[in-house]
Length: 135
Ligand code: FES
Image (cartoon, rainbow, N blue to C red; front, side, top):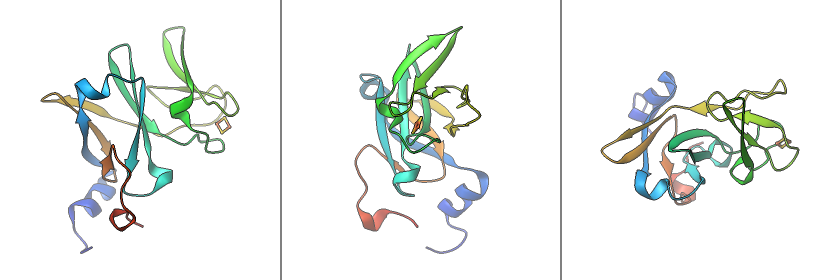
């Protein structure tokens, strides 16, 4: 890929708005795994809780547990996902944990009925073929 491409610029700025899909479809499930062109470690969980979307890295900052499979609870007005592997908590909005860990979160916006996530890599609801992955 030539330098100065849109994706290179996106990385330099910390991400571009990436279309994920229709809000009506994505709001039907509590969490969707969204595949990233940067590889499995960059896949994203798109949560839909109480009418709001949240996005964070899909693999737990502790040891890589699948956060899309975690329980979601509210405590003192804070929505948290609990990792299914060791039960660490992560704030859906900030990624902060009661432990010292920090999960990467991403901005989400709705536009024309579609959900967009600000991310450095291309995002897809379907697994990306290997040739479309970026190193
Ligand atoms: S892998 Fe998530 S808490 Fe350990």
